Length: 319
Image 1 (cartoon, rainbow, N blue to C red):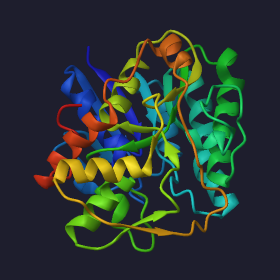
Image 2 (cartoon, helix red, strand yellow):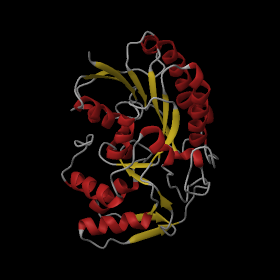
Image 3 (cartoon, rainbow, N blue to C red):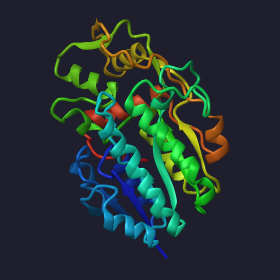
Image 4 (cartoon, rainbow, N blue to C red):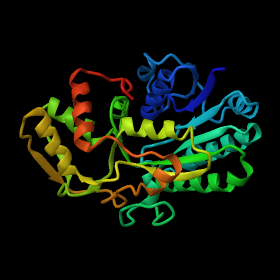
């Protein structure tokens, strides 16, 4: 019997890559629920899934969840722009809708795998570990921490596992649309600076490029999500490379791959909530998922830039 898996936010960066990877496994039907407020239909051109243009707490969708129409649920739908300051909107979209999905899925004992975030750690000292330093610096990070707390309250009442994946700085194919919406650019700096080089525009970096982040390739993020289908218990874990790298390292790798020496313009950082150092502690990821990353920053960037040079815009074909 075929699995039938629901992905909310399935036209987005991670959701579309996940849909493509699930379909490649065979014996799986994928249903995507997305209101297309932040995703992109072009990510689904080569993804043969059922698409419902609805918000993730649509009444009929919740009823289908409660009635057991899905073998598993991936909840990727969210406001991901960390500069959004409308607190009620952020909590309504990110937290309240998730609570509704958990209530419905508890009735049918359906596994839920959901997107949390390294934003839950704010500027706490790295490495970032589950259960410590959970001090978000903005409403986005708080909305994700609130999701983790809601999930924990359901663990004992939800007979199927609930797994939260705290994504760090994800990059890779399928994120073009995050740079193309009016008034905002939320794609990875790898894509943004590659496009700046292509357009012969300056690379602008917050002073002085030594901020360190855990950059994780989309192929590893999909690997963690697939592993979450197999775990037998609920919990939250980090999904990152496990190694922090500087923004200067990103430019250095772009120069290496493209065989250039592109100049950098350092600018003042206007964001008081900007994370200076993130690094995923992966102990819980290994224990919960039996998963560990496979891609180094150099390997991930080599693969990604090669695809960008081929004008590849959709999900990662080898995820």
